[in-house]
Length: 266
Ligand code: PGA
Image 1 (cartoon, protein in one colour):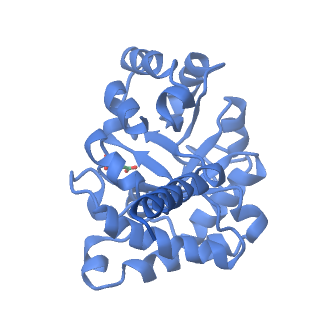
Image 2 (cartoon, rainbow, N blue to C red):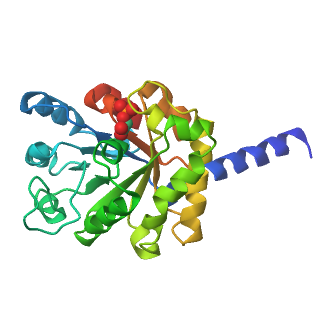
């Protein structure tokens, strides 16, 4: 094949490869504020995020804030393209469950998202794989989108168990069935990369994302968005996002700095 037409063919194939995934799965970047913030700092952060649109950031943007600040986030972001949500949810609908917050309460504050099964909840609050799946189901029942977090510890990775741990964590979620699973988002957050500054390499992350994709595909939910989380920052976002099965990010520390968070989404 003459050089020029070969070049044209390869270019066309490259364009085809980069354009086919986008319409299927929109890029999504969610900030997890954890237990940070106060009314004054939040107001500045939310005001800086408010003008962001998918045109300026090329990603759908969202923030998951502490419960007491949901009303503030709702007020500051309503009418914008930035959505908001909570960092946890109760499996219970209502009743004598002191300290718990139900899915319908989150709906009252206009939430779109609820994180479930974040590794800090799994480890500090002894949340089991089944409880996490039940929380995902409670979120879905109220019309929220659960972001189901999974991830292995360093010891599990070193023992070669990363993928089997993720499969175990996902099993009760997949058991909810294709209809439910097609409405949720999965976030892969290796525990050893959270808040440590040690990000998984794009290849390490892609390997696990591909395994998650295969598990989702097996039940007919192959187009679910799979986010990566763990020390994501502007400097490493592009290389992570270049991986075929990484559809966005769940961002902790860097989500507290508006410029950094917006740069990740851009
Ligand atoms: P990090 O946290 O970005 O600060 O590592 C991510 C997360 O825990 O969701």
